[in-house]
Image (cartoon, rainbow, N blue to C red; front, side, top):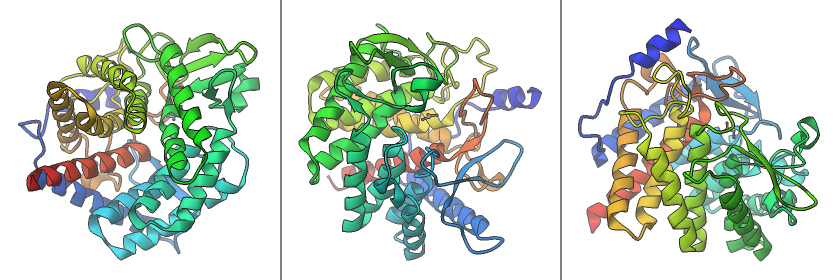
Length: 405
Ligand code: GLY
């Protein structure tokens, strides 16, 4: 514990003095991701041939190699490593990376042919097959996404108006119909499928889920609850609680990031201004309460702050979302504010305070997975790396587009 507290105190203010990232700095960060990706691939094949069903998940603070998890229906993070490989391929155009991306992605294809285990199908299939399709247009990938979107939709309860996130907790915790904020991310796959040959019902489900979540899973100050528990007979909210946050009434950093990301996608896909107004409020309360280096403590209300762990993963998710939101908002001042905030986050993440560099093959340090369970505290976690490379990729595209204008 002493070591953890010390490492938190040592996080310096900002490596990049301006807090902005120009194209050369973004390319440097993407080159760094490319070389760390190669390191991970080398590590994965060090003993024998790569087992493509094993996905990097985390590297604890004291360790220097990825802990791997089997790509099963229960392993919600299994799509992030293939997704990273796709982003890296999109940046490097390296055919070796493409071939590895294809092989890891293929390990998740089984999800299109089994019943839904839980809501994480979007994370699993849209980060892997979704990116794969975006960068290759492989029609077989499209089929997998469309089938999985239909599977995800089976979790929809029309009386409540949301997707059931965790079927296992219906009995385990007596949460008859539960919806977690993370589930907002999975709506993107439904929106995409409905536009690409899937049913219109998928769009309607995504909209209904977003509306009910907006109505029931936020406090008046726009901070979010992690879990909403609904009555299956009336569809009414029974209670709103936490699972991974500090307390039921606290703002769990990654939950708020999922909300910022998810409602940004809802506005992109529907162009309904109510989502834009809402997501700006959800983003603004997060931004107002950040520490100086723009990387949140794992929960904004942990009384141990400033001696509490950070969550770099929340910063990565938020940075990626804000880059998109900065292009969607109709208010130029807000657009600039979101763009600058995202760049400040990425500059901070790209400093020696947060990049793993020589110490580990991950991109980043200092994420918090599940504080109440005492798991993955101050660790490298694969989804932080995924949203980091996604955010860098988005920033590169924005800066390149602006350069030719
Ligand atoms: N989806 C689980 C998490 O954010 O930790």
